[in-house]
Image 1: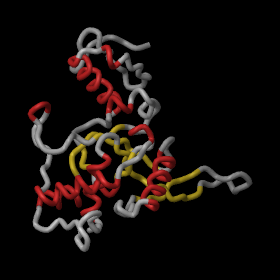
Image 2 (image 1 turned 60 degrees about the vertical axis):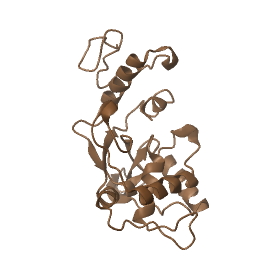
Image 3 (image 1 turned 180 degrees about the vertical axis):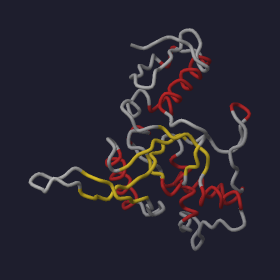
Image 4 (image 1 turned 90 degrees about the vertical axis):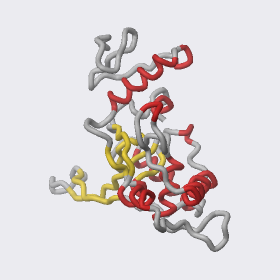
Length: 232
């Protein structure tokens, strides 16, 4: 049962969500701005991995298949963001709340080819990158994972390749723009020109070492259609 016990991010009428409960999101359109912010924080705290913001390396990020109405990303918009970074320089996020400057706070879901929606997200992104070469090539982690023995086997676990990655919710174009720099990809509009980091130390740090963001646990409920729009 859901408790209404307040916590540090709650007020009367904003539920407190124990770690293992399923979240019921009320009608977003009927809420005041203050309650929307409080609800966002409550849901975020429920699903996020504990601890401070984590560095999210762009080349390990792909779009989450359940976000953006399953429409994917726009290659033109990714190049527009990259062109803006190249022209104006990279502006890292500084500060918090309404006083924050720079890019939006990234929110991603920790995924792999062993999670519920991970394989679908990866397959969809692979197909989009193959059909639209304007995107940077995919570069992801591959690790060995133990899988249950197959039927008729000797009862021992087998080693299988597990691909690990993050699914982006609201910053997909931002991450793919950074990947254009990592790949030194040709510009979509300027013939003969490529995206190069050059002497932009802030851009180099973002591309090679990542940007601070929130990582959500890949648990039941985080991909539901009423939760994703709230966090994206």
